[in-house]
Image (spheres, helix red, strand yellow):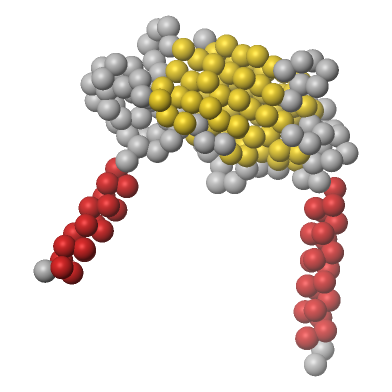
Length: 195
């Protein structure tokens, strides 16, 4: 009897977790199709690298009046920050639709703040935030990260946007380490093969 209870409780937790809404996520879609890459892509060293920023509120279907009493995954509004770290810097940002944006000072442009409040029909599903252009020519590598903040869901509930790395510029030392590691493995393979 106790074993059946625990098995039922575990199954109920698994089903509940599978049906629960996930946090909205901001990411860079390299092909600008809205597809989310598995890993944060590497960016080349260039004076003008384009990042296509997208927001995915989740995939649960909407039921009810959106941005009022609905259930499901949608984003009725958001406030997010994108930070560029290392030697990279923001060149420009072109928002889509009614996105309001602010970039930190022009002398050291490293932070973008974007806000969207629906003033018409809210967008359901993945939505493009805008196009961010960064300069990655500095001598060190760097990260382009979403540093949070919040989204308003389908029923105007406050949801946190998790911090995550959306792209990065490898440091010059990473390539040296990779090449030396591969050379070491090739040498080890050759030495073991001669016995």
